[in-house]
Image 1: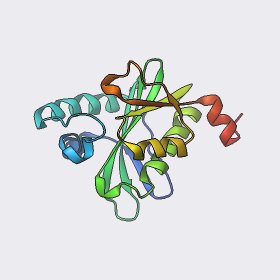
Image 2: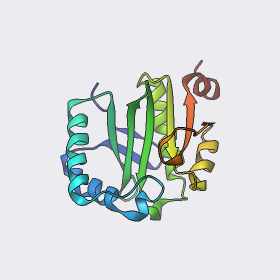
Image 3: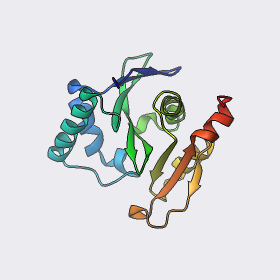
Image 4: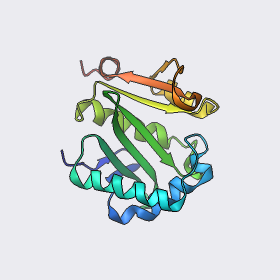
Length: 175
């Protein structure tokens, strides 16, 4: 499947390409961005990871798809959004520059990606996870109608949230 561009009211989600190396490396090496995700990477490791991710996007992998979040009004790249096949379902992950936090960005883009995952991407369920101390992510997941899954056994003592296709269909009238 070729990776489509997606959009929401305020944002374009364009497929990550080779020209996005600097953005990817900057996000993954930034301590403030990675604070609730994982330890920041060093630049070499981030560059190597980018090469793999960009290659998967270029080849049209259904297992690992990444978009750049672009604010429509300014054309500014403000983060990354990914849909990754894991454990038989799809994980949604987002990295957004801190100055864009608490402005509804994550709500809007995750909602759009969730619609894509269920309506076009063949997902039966999607999940997200975050560090337990990230109260903002907890509020976001509740707002997006995800259900908390017990975190026992999850790495780093993280919190996991899941939303099924059936739950999405009931809420969106797509049954």
